[in-house]
Length: 199
Image (cartoon, rainbow, N blue to C red):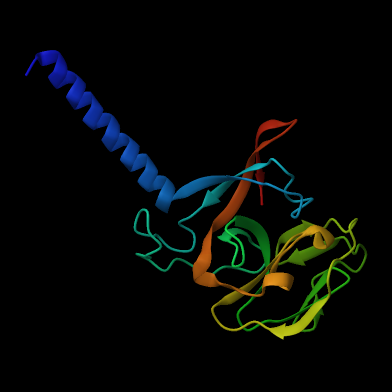
């Protein structure tokens, strides 16, 4: 074989291996996602690009849904990416309730086990531990919900723009195993450019 062809062949194989490693990393470690709608305002805006950590809830075999490790449980208040149980689309929503919680939503305000998550001074804020969430209630609070007990292994995911979000109030609980990854930060926002806005 001609030496130039050998060199081209080696370079093509090297490029292919690098591409495969990068795709495998994207499949199991981290990925990105572009926010398609305003259902998560004001936390996320349409067009935001977010960094998604896929390893948080367990490492998976590349290009499959088979878990190699369990990872940690999804926590209340986290923003996650998952496949819609009713449409062929990927969604980004906030987990407001986890297995064992009794959850109700009235006028857009979440209560867990009878305790409101909202601020007593500003109904447009909720607190999930250290996470402070600014809600968009300009579309109203959306549908009331519950009280419902979340079964073990399941989650309730809803949008921060409570009146502008097709979410768990419509399609029900999602399985914890179906969560694709945790949204860590906005890394690009229109008008601001590159940034790192932690979620």
